[in-house]
Length: 194
Image (cartoon, helix red, strand yellow):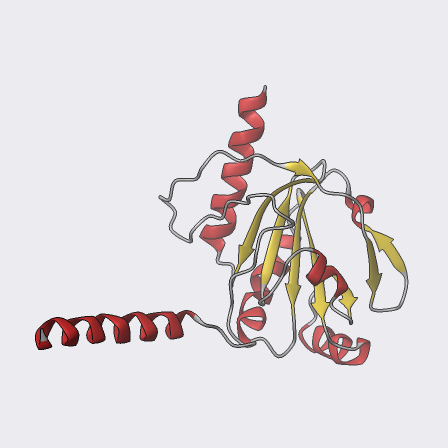
């Protein structure tokens, strides 16, 4: 009886420690819920990972406020693959993926929309100017867009096709092979439609 109780206690403690280790802080890349209730697939950073069939839907247009205060919208970026990246200057994983996002934005078929969440214009502008990033940067000072799309941790990236079809939400820091894996999966879905 005593050994059975001890075994249950050990298993309970292991479960508690495991779950505690899964919690994230504001600095950590944390898991985000899919947009609304639609199931969204993610791709691991392994190049040989398999993906489930995607069921994309057309993302509705939304307004974006640039660093200079001008407004535009998602639909202004028609004709390219779109990576919407939610980030913050205090997030170490966001900072680490910025050079990769900048390189990605230089591709002819991709545009990166970096949306800073919860920060003021001066903080974000100073950071972007310091490193000379060329992707389009927008402000979500109140976190309205991040909340709308279920973003609970940074960075989180949304992947859209050229016609605003929403394919993936990827919580966490992007790596080159992850991005290519996602783009390959999207291309495969689009080719299978033909």
